[in-house]
Amino acid sequence: MRPTACALVLTAVLTACTRDSGPGTFTEFGKRTPPAVPSRTGAIDPSWVEPGGTIGTTIADGQYWGTVDGLGEGVDGRFVSVMLSQAFFAAACLEQFGPAECDDDFAVLDSPAGSFPAFIADLTEVSVVAADRQNFGISAEQFGELLLGNAAPDAPPGFRFDPTYPVLVTVAGGRATELNQIWVP
Image 1 (cartoon, rainbow, N blue to C red):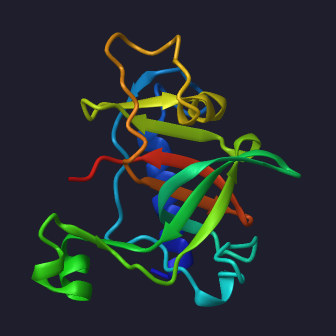
Image 2 (image 1 turned 45 degrees about the vertical axis):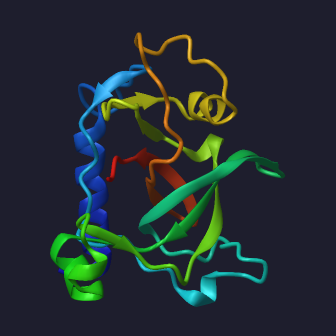
């Protein structure tokens, strides 16, 4: 299968697996199935990384490993700043890095990497992992509020957001469309 087709199939599978009851349905803080991780996320092309370490809209469609840097405001509105890089899991990790670097069954390339804005208005799907490792679907606006440290009035009792967990970032048309937080050891 061609890489583009694989990315499209993976995106479709992840979308189907993370909806509450079917396409187009959404419940704030509805429990979600954790997103499936690929054997490796999309590679960051060094030519995408601009001076200053940002990634512009030349990024290819696909799914990337990200760590959330914070929240910002730009010409296109409020955005989540995400540091994108490439991650490897299981056998792909062992093949890329060897057993010494894959003791938790994953590893991340340090470079190339770059900061990428995930605009709140563009995000059609967001899920977070609570401290108890349960995944919940939330709105992009709610994700922004959690990043600011604001309370989540619709959260289940005992919910505690952990911003240190990484995210799988789905990019389409040069823009982030999904942020799905994952638990890793």
